[in-house]
Structures are given as structure tokens and as C-alpha cells.
Image (cartoon, rainbow, N blue to C red):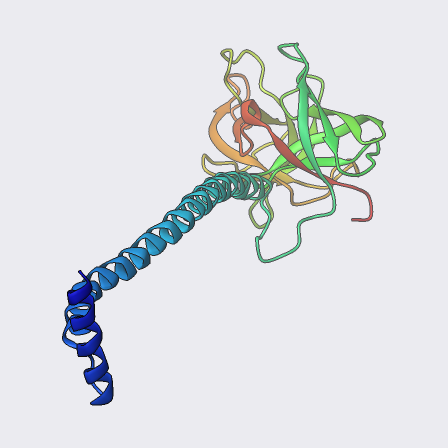
Length: 263
């Protein structure tokens, strides 16, 4: 061992004197460097895996949060789309032009009277109501407010047996008459009666009927309905009665427009 140590020391001394590494040093370096390189690279791999694992957990958590946000936004989008469709249906029912601001008073039907011939509804508006306010939809005339208490009011419908509207045929020099609820119609049928027409009145199936404005209860030119058929009196053929199909579907009243005085 002493001799080996002396030989190695002599070889190293000569190598250092010549500015080079000794044979044992070269052998040791070539033996250690691959191991050192493997350890360094392995350390880098372990470090990268550890960093990736940490970031991966954060990415998974962030991805889950984003998924929840997307789900919430999608649910909100569906709700907003539902509101849009409902708003569009209301505007169509009330006859609002989407390019123009809505009329000042809109109301929702909140109750129906139970009577068969006494047809009335209760509405709740977005503003104060007054007795005598006219109620309509985009299709035509509904009736008028006969009782008012704040934003709520009772509306007598055209189908009410105790109600009448001064009307006329919508033609040049169209004949005037009175609109009543048609009696003796099958349950669920919606028909109005245009009577009190002058002798020899010219009324035909397909004629449009509007309010005349006479009497001051209703303003003129509100659409009421279309003549479905005309019947002549068996006693006096010059006396006629017209059955009118209303424009408004009274079985599906949801939203209405209220016309207040001065508006």
C-alpha cells in the first residue's frame, strides 16, 4: 500500500509539473463524471416533476373553478334568454313596437270573476289606475276599468252580459250600432252581437268593427272584431244582426295595456 501510494504520488507530481492530470485522476474523473451527470440530471428531473405536480394541482383547481363559472354563466344565459322570450311575448301581446318605448301603463291580469255571464277580471298595473280607464291588448279592445284602488282595478270585459260599446263598421260611411255579448252561445265560445243597426244597414261577413266614440265612454277607432255572419229578422228583412268574432282571445288574457285619460 505504501509503495502504491508512493507511485501514485510520484505520478501526480510529474503530471502537475507537466501541467496535466495524472492517470489516476483521469481514471477517477471518467468514472465519477457519468455518475455526477446522472445525479444532476436526475435532480433536475425530480425538481421539474415536483414543480409540475404542484402547478398541476393548481391548474386542476383553477380548471374546476372555471368550469363552475362557465356552468353558472350558462345558467344565467338561459335565464336571461327566458326573460327575453317572455318580454318579447308580452310586447307582441300588447302590440308594442320594439323600436319604440312602451306605453306608460302596462298591467297583468291577476284574477278572473267566476260568473258565466258576468265576465270581469282584476288587473295590477305599474301605475295608479282610475275608474273609466280603457283596457286593450295589441289585438284589440278588452273593456274598461269600473273599480280602481291604487294600482289594482276591476275590468268589465266586452263579453260581460251587462256591458255595451258604441261601435261602427270600419268602412267609409260605415253603419253604427251597439256591441253586446252574444247570448245563447255554447260554453267557451266567444262571440259579440252588433245590433241596434239602422234599417237597411249594409253589414257583410268579413267587415271589421271598431269603436265609434259615441257616448264618450270609449275613444273612437279601437279595434273590436270582425263580422262572422249576418242574420236578418224573420219579421222585418231590413232589420239585421251581425255576429262579431272579437280580436282579443279573452281566455288567454295575461298582459294588457291601460289607456288613461290624457295619455
